[in-house]
Image (tube, rainbow, N blue to C red; front, side):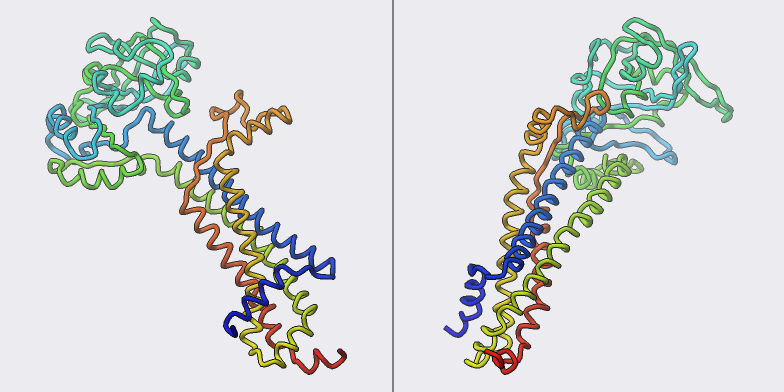
Length: 416
């Protein structure tokens, strides 16, 4: 019974209504601030997770999870076709396709654009890139060896005024056997237009048949690479490390997290800063909690003195107010987790409802490619948000509870 006294009294104080309006007001404000802070943090991080996933899907639309290549110091090139067949049989690999990519200039008077000319094998490209789904004009199968056809991004087509059947000259910087600059020109016919909805692809990428690109290079094997896809893009680093052990000597493998590291590093920094800023809302709620408990301690001085005279130790008195403050704060945390998880899960629908209600667009289709708000709830994030919020609010209850344990019984009962 004695062990349950702090719990019994603490919960009774939680349920009891204070006769002082300001104490009750501060109690509700502290609970509401904790709830709003936790809810806002869960919702915003869920939306940022969704935007990160949307960016990842778009970046990987026309690129693979990993690529195998020869370093500049390599002497002999492998049989790329045979290597591709071997890699396709490796665990967790869903596809492999030989590719070559070089920097070039696209020329169509009077405009000139820096581009990347990529040579692909159309029969296997679908295993590593969603090029077919990105096509808006033409067909990927039109890229046959010797046809000198090219598929251009929508951004390039708009900037150069290109349409199906138009010609485009590609200037490829190469060197001769002595290392002197020897630029080469190649004229291609536009056989299709793609729209990957990623600026880096739509305004920079030209796609041609693998053999057509090889023909304009003096040493094409040095530029070749093998693109590989795995069952899950998020496990590309682990699968690439396992695959590296079975590669021929001298070959290297690099996964997409390295190639696009700058994008996702920026997102991680933004998420971290947003989490810190929004956690300050919980910290503000903790100050309200301190003020509320301090006023409760002042209001309950007589009760504390009676408990002390009945033999209750200072530690048990302190536990009473720790329990009272923690229950109020943790109820706010739990409510924030529930509301935040619900709103985070339905963030897209909630945003669409607000757009219809107030007749405005959060992401205007004239400016942004992403016109809806994606969201992705992650259990581990919700767990650490709730955990940190609980620790902050628990720390806020310590000082007022400690003051309650130091109330002198004689002074508190002197004028009663």
